Image (cartoon, rainbow, N blue to C red; front, side, top):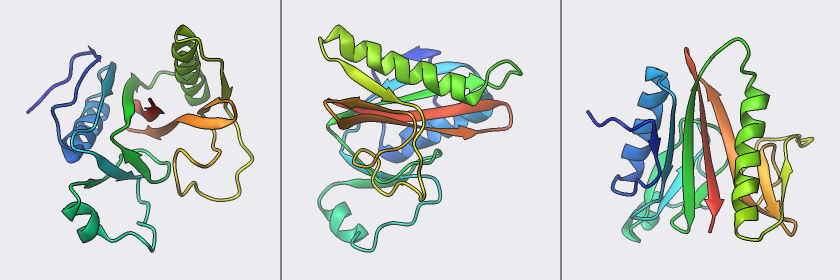
Length: 171
């Protein structure tokens, strides 16, 4: 059974299903961790319990070499291969509010952009009437924008003893 170091900054040797299984297992273990990874081969991920769009033809995408996987967190469909993904497991504690955790993660992404000379904006709340269908094309809470374009999005799920945050940053 594979384990992840508390901080893993490069992890690209797993399939899409292995990445998501590792994130879920880490959340169930409730051990604090941060994992940054890439997708090789490219993949399409659906948010937790998200139905594939009507245009989605799984056999066609798999024949093209794309893996399909469901993320343990919410959000919309995401296309991976030109992004860097992150997963954060934070043990649930009385003084750790989910909004504060997500705010810190978004702020970290904003600071990362700044180190490359890019001025990013963070959106923590969005009046949203429906579920996000396409992760990095629709406005959503806990998102990072450059020049009005969404370049990162993060989703949260509560586990019995931890919070799991997953996100993607376009590069």
